[in-house]
Image (cartoon, rainbow, N blue to C red; front, top):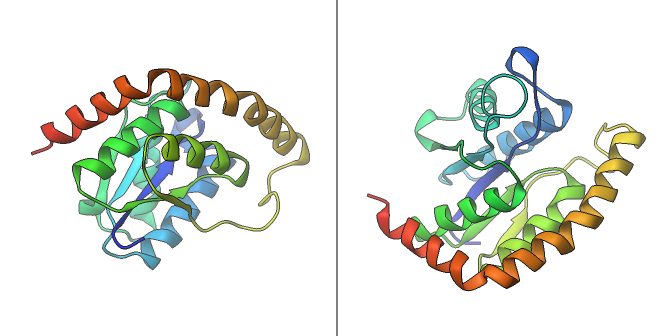
Length: 178
């Protein structure tokens, strides 16, 4: 991709605003992507969950801690799930006339994200990943793979059924950007 955005997908925030292991991995992937693509804007996506601040703000704080420039970071604190984050990412890419996005998430999550972005006409590529389960426990990894097996066709059906309305909303959002 010629001019991509980096999009970091949220995960749980622990009490006290600490990133969960999944969120910490995603922040690490985004830090590497940010260093590899120094001109790319970074969308930090994820709303407020059960504990503490928004996932997006925890991602941003982690990236600042890795030395990324604050002016590169844009927070999407409204998205409460993967599908909402994908729509926000599509709007972000379109509003800035970017070529697509580099996805920073866990390996088990990337297939669904790329499928949904593709259905919305946005090119994507996986960001940096650690090999295998990347330190996730077998129990967590298995649970997440099972969740993805159910969530992928569900979210894709929603996107395909609502595609015209979603594309209109993305275009409207992109045209409102100053």
